[in-house]
Length: 341
Image 1 (cartoon, rainbow, N blue to C red):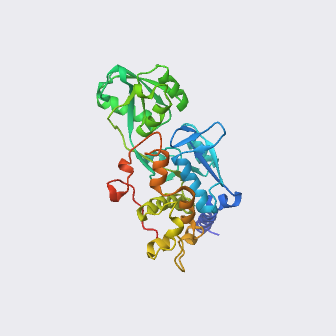
Image 2 (cartoon, rainbow, N blue to C red):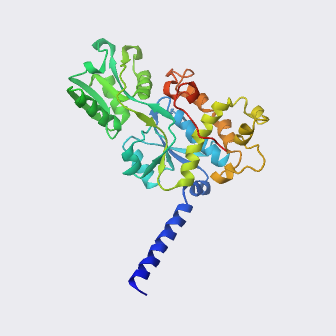
Image 3 (cartoon, rainbow, N blue to C red):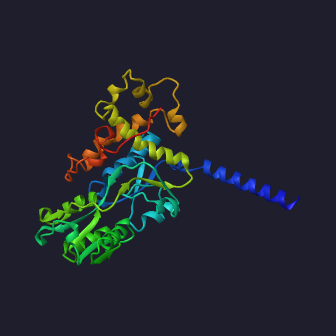
C-alpha cells in the first residue's frame, strides 16, 4: 500500500470515528443516565440560589428545569452543581456538567479558546457599579482613586481595567475568587465600590444589611449577553438547549402561559398547534430528538419567558428589575425567537 493511500485510509478512519463520536453526544448520554446535570450559581438571588434545605431557585434554575421537561417530560429530572466563577469552565470542559447556566457572558474567546458554544441569550445585561450613598458619588467617572471589589476569573475584572484605563482613572482592585468573599469585603467596607453585572448588583444589594444605603450608578460599561453554554461540536444537544429558550420566548409571543396552556392546545392557529405538538404529521420534536410535546412540557413546567422573568427577577420578585432590553422584540426589547416550524 502506498504512503498516499495509507494516509487516505487513516484519514477516512479518523473522520468516521469523529462522526461516530459526534452521534453519541450529550443528548444520548443525558437520556441514558436519566437526568440533566446543570452547572449553576448558588449565591445570586433571582438567578441561581440555594436555600438552607438545598433547594435551588432562580431564572437560570428555571431554564435547567425546562431542559429536563423537554427531554424527559419531567422537570424534576435535573441535578444542580453549584460552581464558582473559576470552577465553571473546567466543569463544562471535563464533562462534569452537561450544561452551564450560570450568568455567563458569551464572548469570542469563550467560543473559540475554551471550546464552548453559545447561542440563546436569556438575559441581556451590562456591567455597572454600586457604591454607598454617603460617599456622594453620582457617576462612575468620579471614582478615580477608589478601591473596587471585583471577582477574579470573570469578564468583569477585565472590563473594569479597560474602563479605568480608557478614562484615565486610577483605582485599587480588591480581588477575590468567590462571590461571597467579594460580598463580605464590600459589606465590611474594605472597598468603596462593587462592580459586576448590573443584574447581579440588584441581587447583591438585597443581601446587604441596609440595602437603601447603597446606590447603583447609571453607567453601563459593557455588553454582557448572558446565556447557557455547552461543549462544541455537539449539535443535537446544542439545538435542544437553544430551543428550550426559544420555546419560552415563542410562548410569550403567542400569549401562552402556564395557566392557559391546556386551553391553547385547542387553538385553530396552525402555528400554535404546531408549537404545542397538536399538528398532525409534524416531526419537529423527532428532529430535535424529543417528544412532539416537548414545548408543551417546557411551558407546563416553568411558564413562558415573561412569566419566568417576572417571577424571579422582575416585578414579582424582590429585585424589581424592569424588562428593558429583555422585553420581546415586538415591545422594544431584544428577545426574539426563530420560527418553530
